[in-house]
Image 1 (cartoon, rainbow over the protein chains, first blue to last red):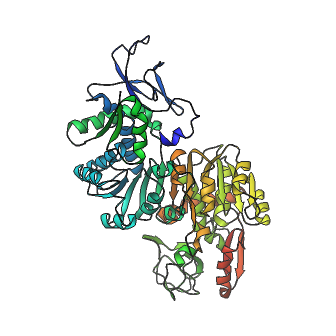
Image 2: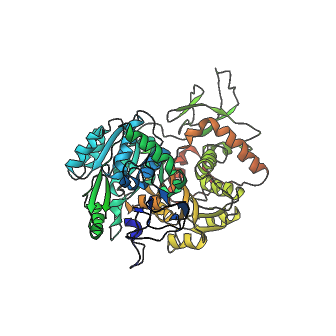
Image 3: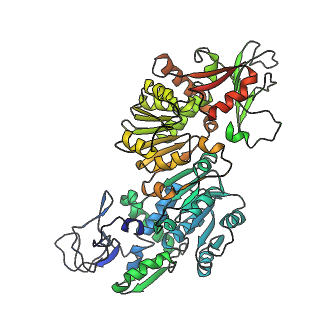
Length: 285
Length: 285
């Protein structure tokens, strides 16, 4: 939301995804009482034509599937857009192989925590970074092999070298900036980098400068790819089905950070930049 | 040679590829008088076991093929390692489609000039950058759609915007640094970047800083890959055969910058960093 919001004109409805209950319907596909999920934005009520747009992609407003969505809020997190982000962004771009080492940051959040768990399911060594000691505990509880509070490490480089004695094969980046530069310099030849976010840069008023990476990408023969999850929009339900199975088998855990009240939406949002949440930040209204 | 040479211990034979004539042979595959090409280094005479090593790859010392190599020196350039670099680095990583726009730099050199010509054969719009007005003329003579002397442009960004009105789809980078940063910021969504070199950085004593690129790669959903041509070592002969066909049909031209005398090798080499050569720099001894 943050990078897109800075491109929105003042006064427009803030973007965002919500689970909503159908109150009235002239569309055969939806009946009053149905729970649906769509990117309606920060609003209490919506008139919808049954479609949601993600960039230049159109998809139907999805009805929650009780067999998949154990609780409605999961359609916003682990079984929603963030879940699809973790699933496709990691599997399609990192292309993990058993025994490889993954570094993932913002790793106690909705996306990072699931990426790390999927990587464990695929037989990878997983090293997570997040911004508090409680989050370190959370990551270790998810089965990560090593976890760091990046605010307390003396050197990011030293932490990566310590926890990845055989180098980094896969990197799932939610942070960008210095984290991107330092992790790349610790990668193995033919490593895969999936760029999902760059949260360290979103609030920068002046673009900070970093060491060159093109020479690192060159000599390590890295593949680096950025993605926006809407490119796989048609395939999201496939991801939800598989992730839901993992949850039911107890192989994947998720957390939600719930804020009550529409009037607290802004605070819930800005909390993302101070590291308030573990798991998906959800506002309940 | 430049980036690898800085990792070599003092006093070791400088690396490099040469065409050599077999003087004596105890190997059935090679007879006195045969012309061969291999990475023997900067030496006048070599004892060879018939293999050449590129990183962790082994390949045979190649005999020149008179049907392919119209002159021996082509085995060092357009029909040698640099030719394979252009061919695989562009086709396998940029994956060009007809109508796409390519930016290539160091584009009057052995690799860049061939990349631009292959791109024209594939129906791309080609914009080349090099370091002199004579090179601009050379690039336009090769059929490039636009060509710039980067030393004379007021702004690299403005030059790219002027010559790529529909944005940049493909970028073949030999230069790195600022060029990498500026071109990325002009790329279209889902663009492909092949990183072949970073010559602007090789002689830097302190690592210069540049604007972050991870956020650009993210929001444009770019694929960026670095490569070293030895990864396709087994397939090099396939490239040479196809490029040789293009040369015979008059579709591809090449230039060589010839320096006479073993004692002038160093000068020929350092000339690469002052922009002396157009096409492949060859030393004839």
